[in-house]
View 1 (cartoon, rainbow, N blue to C red):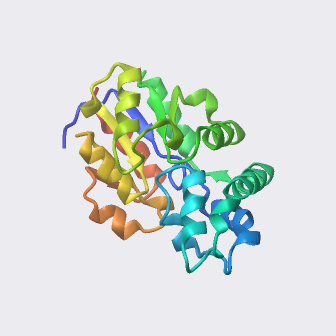
View 2 (cartoon, rainbow, N blue to C red):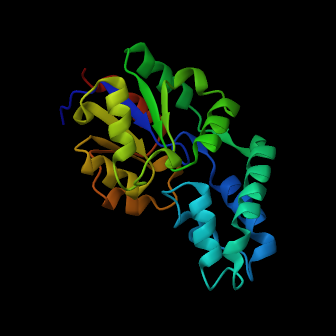
Length: 226
């Protein structure tokens, strides 16, 4: 498929970095004093799309997880989340080969953005901590959009920042919701399966391309036209 590409946008969690174990530990730590049982990884990840504060509220209000009235502790749960997420971020690692992909993209003079459901605070902290900040020109977090993923608002914002038609922005993510966001914007998409929590669902969403490994993504980027 021949698509003209002039900018690239990545999701962060599960796409650029192996974060799901650390995220789930951070949510369980945040919620521990206020729940009747710990949420499973699947229950936590099912809330992703909006930023952490919304994820926490959804879990606190889940009658199978939170204690009655647990939502009144949302501020404290959010404080505990950031305490754990930022204090133990050394557990997070970039997927091998990601830096080389970003360097190749930048060598082609394509701007690089990140559109994530994470709050801007968490996303900026994560990019800085894993050393990607110099390679990423723009970021849209989940608290910077009125309508979170799978809505395409953040992708459209980044296209405008880059002065590039959104149809020429490649969106790379492990999440089926993100593939749907790209489709809603008429942007080409890549299913990044190397870190996907539900790879079969991401493929079923109908991405433009499927990459099972970072090496496959690197080859795809090298083959794309501008």
